[in-house]
Amino acid sequence: MPLIRPSPSGSNSPSNSSSHAQELVDTSGEDQTDLAAMIDHGLREHWRLHRDEPFRGQLWAAVHADTELTVLDLQDSRPNARVMARATAHLTGRTDVEVLERKILLMIELLDSLMRLVVQVDETEAEALVADLVELFVDAVSNP
View 1 (cartoon, rainbow, N blue to C red):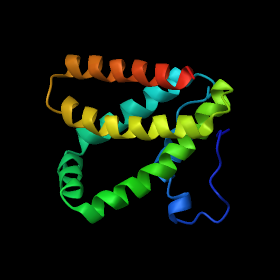
View 2: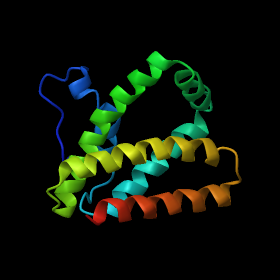
View 3: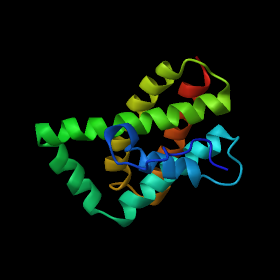
View 4: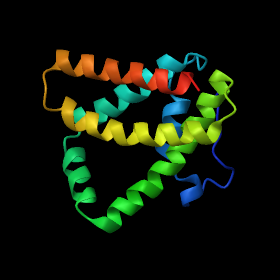
């Protein structure tokens, strides 16, 4: 059973544009009580997409070369951070959801940097880098 359910309207407005984050929460496995496993799943799925669909790196560069598209990218990241913050609060019992949301927004931006790096290194180094970021993310959201 998913931790967070999409709104009944299913709209794609900015307040409900968190479909990617929601999909990761929903598909992270049967056991949605293991925060580290959920974060690991999310990062590895994101890495898989970047590895298997190299155009994503070019798209990222194009988006961030345009100020208006960068603003839209941030508008898309905020609801994703909100979904992930609520799921994290549910798993950890934390009540400072606004702090979690801010930290996760930062993690989303760091994840973009990691994706640009892991597609340029060999598989062994990429695995280690992803594992390192998972560890950093878990530490960041587990400790107030």
